[in-house]
Length: 229
Image (cartoon, rainbow, N blue to C red):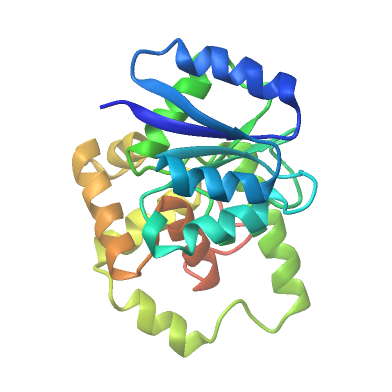
């Protein structure tokens, strides 16, 4: 099955470069280009895209708001958004994840990595690089110091109580930046079993994808800024 991609960036040269690369892949195709957030949302609706490569900084409606509109629309439930950033430590990383983005790519990404990222996200996985994860940890650290807590302790315990011990363990390791393969090796599981535990945790916590599962791990206190493997 061909993965349908929408490109959203206000720079035509960047869109053209990505289009050439994506259209050259036998299993990917660009179905539309947008220069601002409003156009991106309309294109996703009209083309029934699978994945959007979304720049954050665009005139008018920015990439974060456009992402929020896409991911909050029940008719677009299957659409995945990859945020394009100049730097993966962008200050808006956490905000974009909360808006529903499934991952991040730097604009200087290697061609093969770009194509693999689209496939990974289209398959329902999250794309959180170590840089993006660190940016998220920094944002949580700032929030924790500015508030009494990330979430109500009783609410957090109730959420975590929905999970088995193994699901909580997998969720914690995912939040610390480990891939399914890494988790499987650490817990002496198969990668498929690790993925199954992560998917069950997402289902029980009503998380859209792995990226939001990571956010919940910090919001519930399962993982705290500064935690290490």
